[in-house]
Image 1 (cartoon, rainbow over the protein chains, first blue to last red):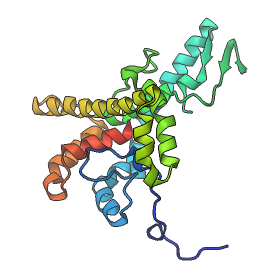
Image 2: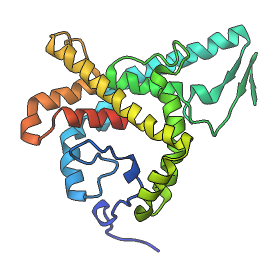
Image 3: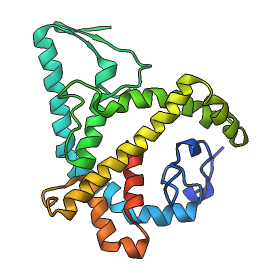
Image 4: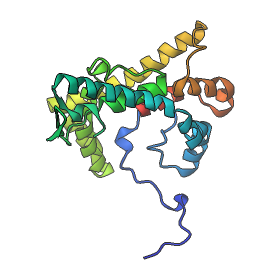
Length: 91
Length: 147
């Protein structure tokens, strides 16, 4: 089946993530907000921070972390020790 | 299990642990890695906290919304689940502590060299916080989401 003209606004988020919502915040966070209009309003405030151009500006910071990980792996390789990779990298 | 040079890599996919991912969050949000990788330890017990929390919250998420209060309340009677609920509080306190620490630095005028997303959230708060109703609680909520 091909869906035509379907936008994000037509597909409502389910209530799956609600248990993750903090009890103390004044507005629901972006992950758990089921009100599309409010989600858009609140998201617009911080949108620039999560934009691709801003993320690309932080690439150097991520590189530092990658270098740290490589250094730690190399250190273990030199020692010939055993590593549990699940502790070190994303699951 | 994979042999990599003289190192044996043991991959356990089900473990919810990730020093690298947490240090990336630290670097991006607070301009400094937490030290998970450098010191090879569970900084602030974050990883342990999430290990406790995720399985229980996943069950709650998969339950029908009308059953969730029952799941949460009955779950709290199980010691492991009770620990998970306390763990959630730990994440909340951690995000509050991060924000309070930065707020203090800003007030003391020692945040000029601070970058990262946390500082950007504070900038938004100072520039258009009143207009957009974006205050300290909202900054904490963003950090809570990151952790």
